[in-house]
Amino acid sequence: MKKNLRALSAVLTTVVTAGALAGCGAVRQETQSAVSDGSAIPKTDYDSFYVESESDVNAVAPVEEEAACDASTAEPSESAYAPAAATENRLFAGKAVTEQSATCDFDDFYYAYPEKYNTESYDKPDENGFFMAMGEPLSTFAADVDTASYANVRRMIEEGYDAGMIPPEAVRPEEFINYFSYDLKSAGKRDKFGVTCEVAPCPWNEDHDLLFVGVKAEDKLDGDIPKSNLVFLIDVSGSMASPNKLDLLKKSFIDLVDNLPGDGCVSIVTYASKEEVVLEGADMRDKSRIKRAIRSLEAAGSTAGERGMEMAYEVAKDYFIEGGNNRIIMATDGDLNVGISDPDDLEKFIKGKKDDGIFLSVLGFGEGNYKDDRLERLADCGNGNYSYIDCESEAGKVLVDEMSSTLVTVAKDVKFQIEFNPAVVNSYRLIGYENRQMDAVDFNNDKKDGGEIGSGHSVVALYEIVTEGSRSAIDLKYQHGDKDDASDEYATIKIRYKEPEEDTSKLCSFVVAKDSYSDEPSENLTFAGLVAEFAMLLSGSDYSGDISYRDIINSYRQLDETDDYKDEFISLVRLMDKRS
Image (cartoon, rainbow, N blue to C red; front, side):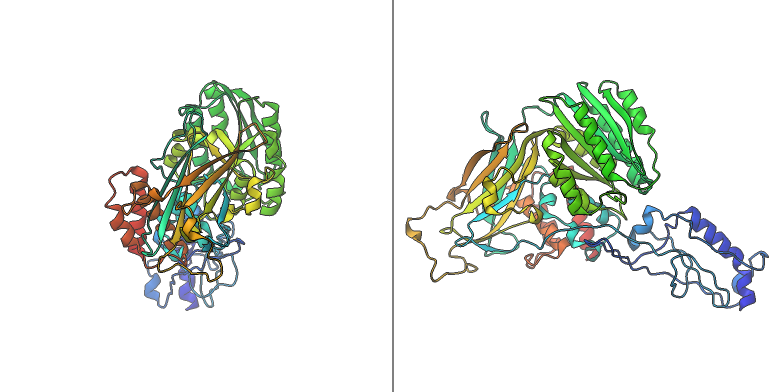
């Protein structure tokens, strides 16, 4: 057999060479998982190829006596991190391999490519449960307009993931819900926010109701942006060297530059093994110069994000515009491996920068080594917002179509506090916002951070509520209160916020009245409920009841008002239904 195997070495040489040129991107993986500590390794199912007779190699040309196999220098492509459904090409392999590098053993032949590591990392607290309104009437959380979770999970689904392969920590229901547009009341002339409230039956539990709270910020800019000082902080480390990272990033920023108004300046800071100011204080009208600088970027080296962020804030301060829009737009895969990399340390670092009047937008790119937990923490603690860019159309949505809401903050440190009336609401559960929860006493503390809301931006929150008298209500023996004289309101919504250049908060409040209830939910509540159901199914929620993907599809057909983004949503649901 040894003789026959030597004759096969020409085939192996061809395979190894082709595999190296392909970037080891053809290994089939059955499962992929990424957990909060980033240490998970996908299980790889190698197909086997065995040679048992001379006929198996009768077409092979003569080769040298000894074959040398070494694929250790071959860099894995992004497709190597994709699940089985994303790629059909496979390489030869054999018995179990204990070394990561490819190996040839002609006494007992086998060949295998290096095992591919998925180091994506996510973090999310346990899912919110129900609280008794009598004992804990206050629900307090920071505003969150991030949409990264939905776009990132969409990428996974389009690559072939089934529900068991999507990390539950990657699914943040509030970011699914807030990805979409809703028909909300606009703010009045003297108001910062418009608030839309509605109560209707819960689609996944007939004994419960859903409370829809939609808040829309003022939009005095009419889609435009004021005089701006923008700093593009771009990761050009070696981990960004792939089409869905730096290449997509450059296209996205060029599209943004083409649509920027001409009033202000743009700087570009890059970081890899070292940081560099590629462009400083360029006139925003000089679009050709800015785009040339973007096109010149190349990926190489390690990722020293700490010093890059330091330099970006220094440049932003040097060109600070009083009364203007001062913002850093950070674009990266989050894989920081030099300097600060721990999320807790990053939080401390970025909190020290947020009081300079400079806001932060974080754009995530790529897969395989994506560090969602770090990027979300940076945005939350740095007066910012967080989006994931997986394609050119998503870049256009975030940076062009929603430019004013993404890049211009009209209210900072925004907090919500909903006080439930125990005479009407027996218990409640906030869907999502697990990592934005706050202690009730911190609502009035201006030193405690909230979230940032851009011009015309909207924030939607859904509560699953159990009303008094329903079969699911818990009857308390000693905590009755005087319900006969109590109000019939469901709740009172309080919003505390600061103007972008002020440090003292303002307060506004709205009542969820009894007439907010309807047996026939609006399209706002219906669609938000469908999105919440989808997120609960993907994350394995304890509260999803007996809902199915098919239920979501059937309910979606009843909607009259849809758009391209909503139609894309239901196509994702159909894909998951086929894989379930």
